[in-house]
Image (cartoon, rainbow, N blue to C red; front, side, top):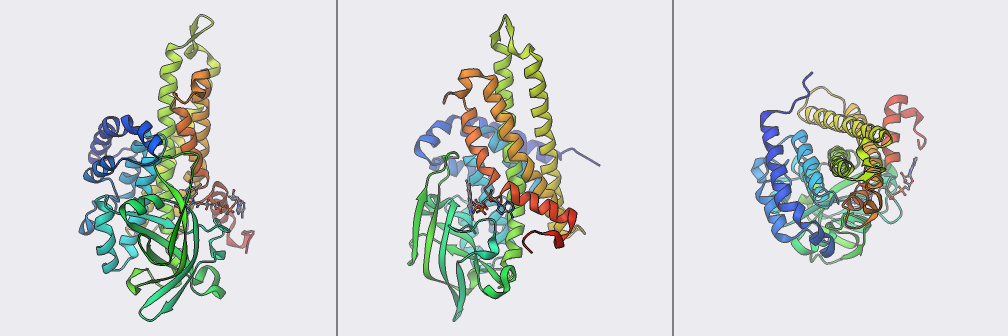
Length: 399
Ligand SMILES: Cc1cc2nc3c(=O)[nH]c(=O)nc-3n(C[C@H](O)[C@H](O)[C@H](O)COP(=O)(O)OP(=O)(O)OC[C@H]3O[C@@H](n4cnc5c(N)ncnc54)[C@H](O)[C@@H]3O)c2cc1C
């Protein structure tokens, strides 16, 4: 067993911490007010090789492993605790990786190099107004027409729609192709959004993560070429989960990064704030809670890195079962947002009235981390996955 990162990974983390402190941290308020990541910061992220870094070198990426992407997710969230930059990072990284793995050469050539340079956004669209967790019941349809496909339906609660409007790009999208086959009849494909006839974009406001947009789109008989297919027809449900697993592992580290930063802030505050004649850091009531929060975050961190390490091994063809990886990832994604939320909430409490003010950055972290009990799969769905692996598929409630 070796719990250490490689020298390159340590160096990557140190460089990233410096970049985040100098470039991202000073821009948080501006991002919040403008509800967008500034263009020059997107450029900086691209120049640092951080956008869709896990795609192969052939398409401009670094092809780095999931663990190294996890380091980036954790560090970005340490700096931008609102989770906007980390969300921007993790979405394009996980779904860029999936498109790279399963997309056609033509689609990859068209989409990935631009995404890597920050000139185009790539997201994920599975959720609809009436379904989120129960993917196999979705209504969006894709059918074959000539050499290509026709798509109709609606996607909602989708991250990044304004980024697509700004930069161009589109979504790894899931739809039903053969409804009578349920999960075995779903197809994954790339759907461009900008200036596409039949696409109408809608907007929503999130309670946190202000630098990344949220919304949806209507898809009215949109024709796409055959080379936008991702993987094989009717295999989409299974392929999409490989992307979800990558994203979920990164999310677990985003939550840890944001919450660790809140604990650091709270520790500084507790040492200088006095009550009843001494620093509040001296009171065991606070010390015990701090020790518990920190230990839980460290446990979540270990679970997440182990899960991403397993993901890497499985993706490289080691003999690890898909289901074992799903379980490890689900455990991390189940615990991390909740423990992070509780740690941030405690950090607010220890900072007294200041902790409740907008000046205190913990409110930002609390709102950002809160999104991750839902985004990319809810906490309850993570529990279903873990329980499914413990009990066996025959005990799934919905079978
Ligand atoms: C900030 C944010 C960003 C998002 N970005 C995207 C995106 O980019 N792309 C995208 O496709 N989607 C996105 N989503 C949607 C997200 O994936 C869904 O919210 C999530 O999958 C849950 O689906 P739902 O909201 O429809 O809840 P539902 O599936 O309707 O569930 C409602 C509640 O019931 C629980 N529940 C459902 N079934 C069960 C069960 N069998 N047992 C126990 N509990 C159950 C759920 O956990 C949830 O708490 C985003 C969501 C958020 C909050």
